[in-house]
Amino acid sequence: VSFLPHFRSKKDELMDELLLFSGLREEFILERSVEPPFDPANSINRAPDDFNFGRYLAICLGDCLAQFVEVELPVWFFFMASTVLFYGLVIAVGNDFVTVAWIWAALGWLLLMLHIFLETHVHNILKGFAAEKVSLHSVPFEGSMLLESKSLLPAWCRIDLNDFAEKRSWIAERFGGRTLNRHHAMFIMGRNWPEVQLLVMQASLVFESVYVSLQLIAFLPAMFSQCGTVIFASYVLFSFSPIVCFRLSKGHLVAMLSIVACIGSFRRPDIVTVVIREDKTAMLVRKLLVVYKMYRAAESPSFIDTEDQVPYRLLLDTFELNEISKTFDMFDRNGSGTVAVNDFEAMLAELFVGGSNTTKENLKPLITALDTDGDGTISKEEFLQWYANFHAAENGISMKEHAAFLVSFFDRNGSGGVDAGELKTSLDALNIGFTIEEIGAIQHEMRRGHGHGSGAQTPQEKFESLLKRYYPRGHDRFHDAQQQTKGGRGREIHHPGRRTMMLR
Image (cartoon, rainbow, N blue to C red; front, top):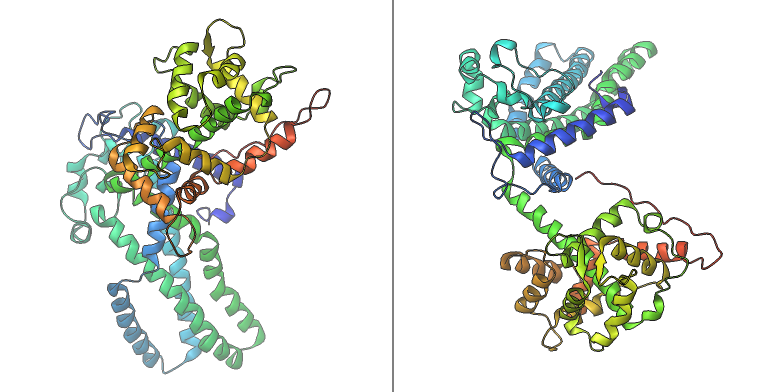
């Protein structure tokens, strides 16, 4: 029962899962070799340190759920054979539906025991893959199967493959394959674990439906008509308790199964590539929104009021501070923490080449507002403070306004459209590092994300779809922050709502 989430301490479970997530993420990014000395992969060839591991797991979960509901032929053959056997059992007991009903209820408890066994096994596997410094409990391997402990290495690194192979049963070899590495040795069914767990979960879902259906159609009516009230009530409690427990904790089990099916040797490089591209695109959208604010400030310097400034840390939450800092790094290309005014002005002029009215004269009020101490350089602190001031002073911005600016930003030749070359040139100016293949994927996202109406999309509609997909709460947050901080001189300044932190 302790392995069912609804019977555990919520606080302890949350802490355990946070630590487990941290350890799994660290090892996933390191991508260690499966052979001693288990060195991490070269930083150039592995996922970046800020890889969105939570998003990766979410995509893998969706893929697993899609596979779980598409029942494979082996599962149907299994139930065909089981039906024949069960029919033979009914004949063997002389069509005694009361006896068959109790046997059927016992099968429900067998399903629950299988669920608990699976959850226990999978939980131990996850701990074995997590970084040792966050492991909370022992892993499911006897000491004779472990090599001498190595500091900070996960448990799978300490498996003695020779000892493991000697103790492995012929059934495990038959269904799990003979060739194993240390990752595969963590699983009962070795390298075939993803396929086996898929069949097991499909079978459990089918059995759950059949179990409840037969209870309602056949066994409950038989028990009600042939047994007394007390026995009938006892049977209802006995037969439905395992199904209720299974239903309450099935989501937790499915989530864990989806994780073990996409880590270690089962990692999904195709999904890793998708997540990295999505992260780059989200970063692009956030940078473009900051650049748009700078464009508006250059076009309408009256928005900026440098008097009675509120410290930026009171106006921006941690997430925003991090994102705006990354945008400053786009200008601070040597990483010194400051940008010369002339360099900053030149980069802005390059970025705003599509703006019809943006000239060096327009940029001067913006540069003056950024360089508050007048030393000829713009520091990250000055940039953050300027952004916070403008963030609090601006009026609400619609998604259409953002999209219209993006069209002018990327349309370098004034044709009214944006081709791959223009997109690549503008993105290179933002210093994000998109490849031509990734730019093609972004264009595909822009084409597929807007509405379901007929006719070709306009460039503005394509950019709207990009904004909605990768920064859906951007406009709402700008408007909310403006309403909360627009108190004016002599009025209380409220903190904007805090963003819910997401595991990465």
